[in-house]
Image (cartoon, rainbow, N blue to C red):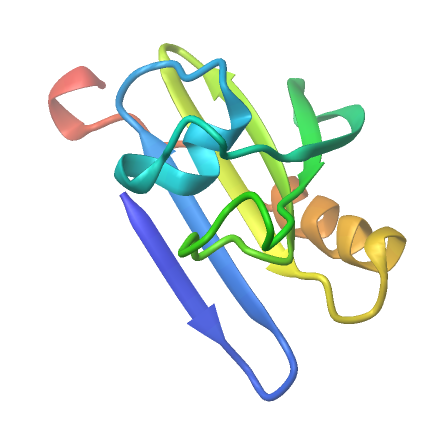
Length: 115
């Protein structure tokens, strides 16, 4: 799953992988990942009981990624890896706060056949 939304001054990207991904650059680049892709780890945090890693996605090492210039929260739950991130418009800290506010509202729902 990949999703994107845009406003006048902001851009949100959401991604989900059906399998766990340990390489954060693979999460933010998806199938377009290449060996030189890198992200900059910022910090770890826990939201909704999920251990997340905040990363910054520089343009130089993520050519073509929808997450370029985004601060992204990445976490894995029940064998799926998720990433959500806003475009860094107002600084790293303010963008991380925006990501965290969004993450607090995320609810993961199992498919109907699994419930």
